[in-house]
Image (cartoon, rainbow, N blue to C red; front, side, top):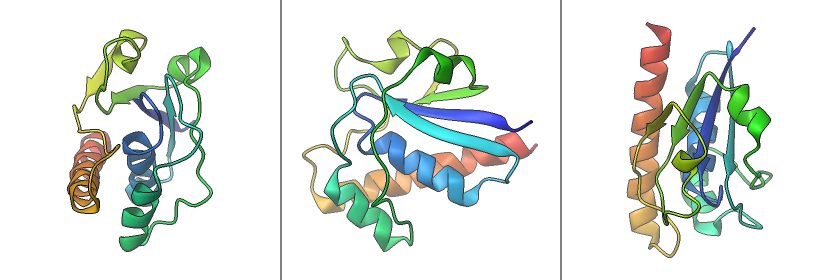
Length: 133
């Protein structure tokens, strides 16, 4: 049975989607991965899609998803990407969560989003390494 990894943030339009995509690309097949948000946006941040395409990951068909209790319950590892506000911060609803405290790409420049993307890639690779030990 695969181990389920869940990346959460508020809008599920940027950070958690990038983390899911990098995890899917780099993790061994015994892992299952998803992402969700407490108040999901209607669509992914278009600049996030663009910067991910720059590193060979197509996210055009990804859609923000609402965080559900079953997602939380069925995940062995939960990662909170960071919080924009205290009312909808996923760590309020998700217990036993890793908190990466990564900046929200919303309303950031493409160069700032590239830095966020590279930070997420690095964190995902570190997580995968600990899971393989």
